[in-house]
Image 1 (cartoon, helix red, strand yellow):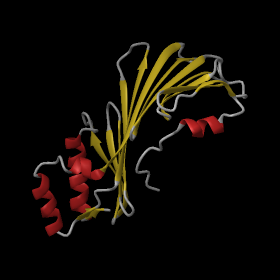
Image 2: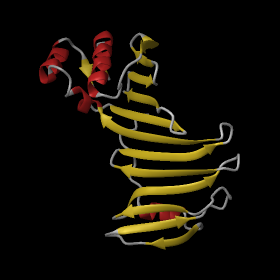
Image 3: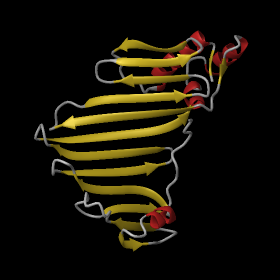
Image 4: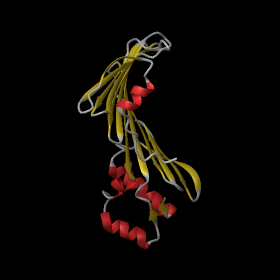
Length: 219
């Protein structure tokens, strides 16, 4: 299934969904609205807070109790075709504070391809060679940063271009980058070693160019 964009969440949608658990609400259709919701499962330390701008969700703030009894805060910013999530908690086993930041965006493949070397000329060469590339393929880019007690950041990437016929997934951390490619030859995994900033368009284009040439397209 291709997810081409993240859904827009409205005030009306959540107000209906949380009708029985809302403890406070302020609705301003042309301004800022707020819902305070207290789930009945007992996992929350305080009500969840949802904030809306012109009836569109822009932030959520959740404070819950983990199974180990410690607190976990999850703060999320919602953007057009993207989210930014910050998770703060105390690791019960390590007895250390852990902060995880997750950034996710979804963009069409064409936004990446148009920045490659050669630009339009490279696209014409692909067409002349019979290579079909579907520029509408959604590319989801997820970056996760993990910090434990202010130690060096551990960064992970999961980048997925999911076509109707072909797919390319790039999984990367501080030490190793893997490409899981599925095309006319089947599904295979390739180790690329350490790759700095795999989310950069130049890095992605290098991988997509390789796939298009080997697979005679990306659809």
